[in-house]
Image 1 (spheres, rainbow, N blue to C red):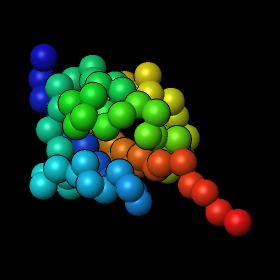
Image 2 (cartoon, rainbow, N blue to C red):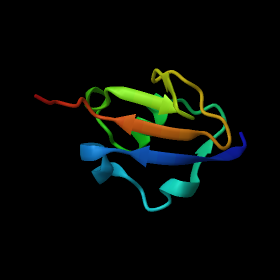
Image 3 (cartoon, rainbow, N blue to C red):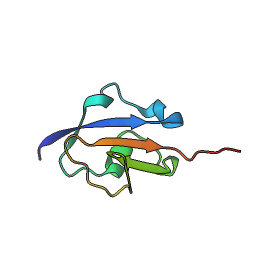
Length: 78
């Protein structure tokens, strides 16, 4: 399987899981969003919104070379 590069953005409380190479994050071809979350030890229930290239997706999305992955936690407000 070939290695591909993505840009990884983790927001608010998820920022603690951000790896140093997030702007040039290497994954294997065929990797899903859920697999990235597991590799980074991000609890699946800690992620509420998943955006790839500015469009909402779910955790089964298969990432492609050059994708920009953004993960957001549940946001409270009042």
